[in-house]
Length: 312
Image (cartoon, rainbow, N blue to C red; front, side, top):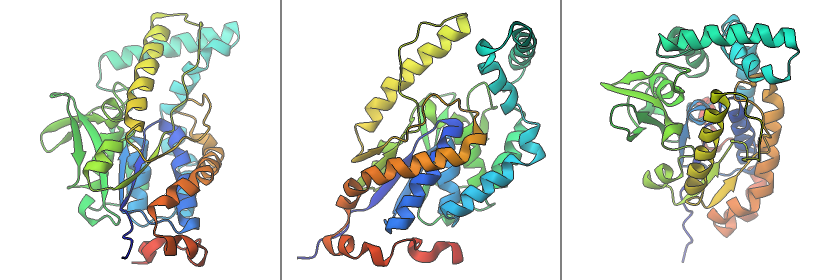
C-alpha cells in the first residue's frame, strides 16, 4: 500500500507589518523541501501569499520589501503618521502637543473620506509587489479572503485580477477605502477570518498549517481616551475570534512578534527571522503530512523551490 501525501494548505493571517514574518515561514518550507498545495491569505497574508504563488521565493520577497521601504511611496505615506500617533503616549509634553494636532487632522480627514490612506497610494504599494496577473494563473493555487461590507459575509476570491483581490483583502477598515470587486464592496478579510484555516480546508487542504502574526493579548490598565478603550476592546474580540480559527489547523506557527505595531515595516528583517525561528520549531509536526520516504530524502531537496516555479 502506497501512502499518499496529504495536500498541504498554508493559511497566512493578517497583522500589518508583522506579516513580514510570513516570509520567514516560507523560507523554512523552501529549505526543507516542504510542498505547498494551496495558499490562502488574509490581509498582509494575502499580499505575501500572492507574491509567492506568482513564483517569487522568500529571498525575492525580502529584496522587494527592502526596495519598497526606500521608495518615495513609502517614505511619504500615511503609515508613518499612524505610527507616530501610536507612540504619542511615550513622548515629551511638546511632542504630545504636536502629535495631538496631527491626530486631530487625521481623524478629521477620516470623517470625510472612506479611509486615511489614499486609494492611489495603497494601489501603488500593491502594484509594487504583486504582478499584473489573474488569480487563476497562480501556482500553487491561491485564494484571498475579504469581507463584504454590505452582507457581512466572508468572500473567498479565486478568480479575477490578482492585484485587485489583494487590495480587497488588505483594505483595513477606516485606514483604506473598501474595494469594488465585481459589484461587491470588500474590505480586510481579517474582519471575518484573521487566519483563514477553515477556508484552506474548504479549498481542498487536508493538512492545514496556520500562521498567526498577531500579538498575544496582555493585561493592560493604561486607557487614556475613548479611542484607547475602543482599540483594546477590538484586540480582545480579535484574540478570541482568532483562537477559534486556529483550533481548525493541524499545525499553528506563531512567530514571536511581541507588541510591534502594524505599521513597523522597517523591522522587516527581524520579523523574517522571527518567522524562520517559529517554523523551525514546528517542522517535525509539519512533516507528518509527508510520506515516510519523502521525509527520509528531504535533505536531497533542501533549498530547492518545489517545481522551480520562479523559472517557469
